Length: 168
Image 1: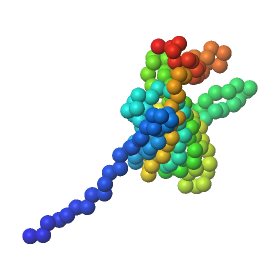
Image 2: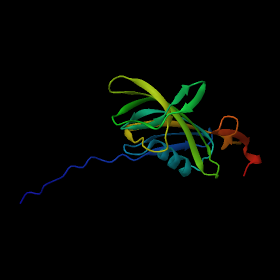
Image 3: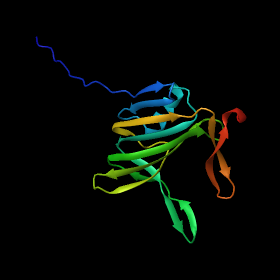
Image 4: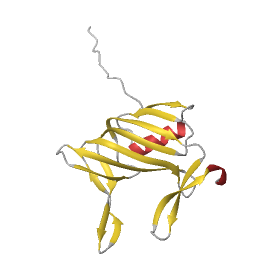
């Protein structure tokens, strides 16, 4: 009796390597991993709460907000989604802490869709799963702690930057 042999393609899992001497993490997020949550997992793995992220790759869908301007007032759009894959041409973000002291990532990017339409914006915390890969570099900051705070004049929750010795 012949046995049916099922071929299973190997599953790729997210990977990162930390060069602690230089304060650099390089790696990739695997297919299906959500962009922001994936970055948070990498930061938690390496105990990072401060730094910058840059990346390239592809996403199977996108959830962002963009800036609007009407009647001399700036505001942000409702969430916008692309339900088709996009090429992430450039992504950049700040790693810090939110008002409750939890890990927070402020991330913007530029992407192109299958119609060759170029756009970008502020990526939401979920709804951005990796398609093939997102390759990234994190520059870790020692001595500086970004912390989200409400900026009363603007009405936005923005990062302020502190000497890490002066903040809990």
